[in-house]
Image (tube, rainbow, N blue to C red; front, side):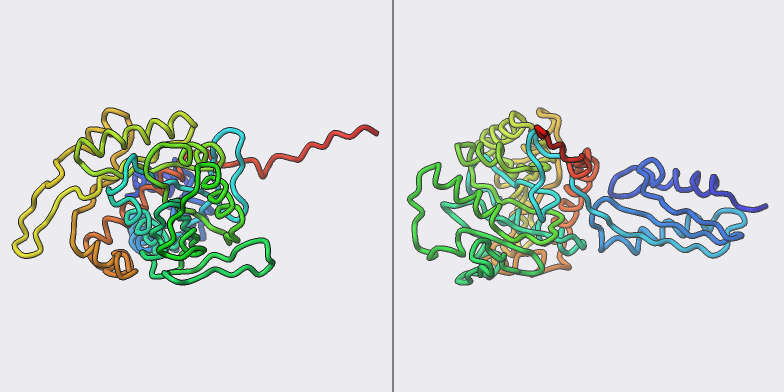
Length: 363
């Protein structure tokens, strides 16, 4: 009996994508199904980067289709296609940037910048074109974290700035433009203007995800960014302790008020594992991030350990994802980064580029 397209679709409906939990038919990921006798060929289009998982996904689909009665050779092409997604009402995506992700915390000292840079590097390792904007004017740390301290960006046209590149990530920071030990004694309006210039005057090139390392807190700078910068979603970083969660909740509510989707919460320094004996201890408490997510009906993206190696690798400008790519911690960062990309991929697409421009003339 000849195999049919309906049989192929039925088989794919029983096959969940391990990253989305949904089948490849309902998400319209399965495309261009072709039959030649018993031979099958199709494409699987992922809306998120997954370079490290594509081979496993391809084998999984081939295995399922080869099990169909009458199936011959099976050819499956799995690839990622990242598109722009909707932002706050009244704002349009930034030229050269498809999706902006704000990584924020209610307070400093929770490891937000280290988490942000590892997420950026993880998305790059998964095949995305990634940018990193260091939005912490008063305490820029990305130059150090990315091993770019002392570097200065160029301007080819005298109007815009070329981002510096580290580990395939395009990056920009006020730290590249001032001396490392120069304090930024600026008032709020100067800070927000500087941030907007760094964002809009940088020559971002075909960036799928621009990670914005937000300054800590919920003041003027954060509110201005949230209202003027087209953000696809925000990630909240906290530690499990109550004092950090109080401020993290304020950050979450701020984004909700300005219409920015909350992609989820990351609990950093979740548990300490002794490098000598392996003993595990929840130094900052346990379960705080999960409880916050339950209270505010948002997703718990994952927990990261309090680990000496994370700090050491960050200090020498080789964050964990590139400094120890085969480590369990690097895999945790990649898992969280993929989940963030999946969450964005499930949101409404930006359609502003499809709308015609309307010009009113008085002839």
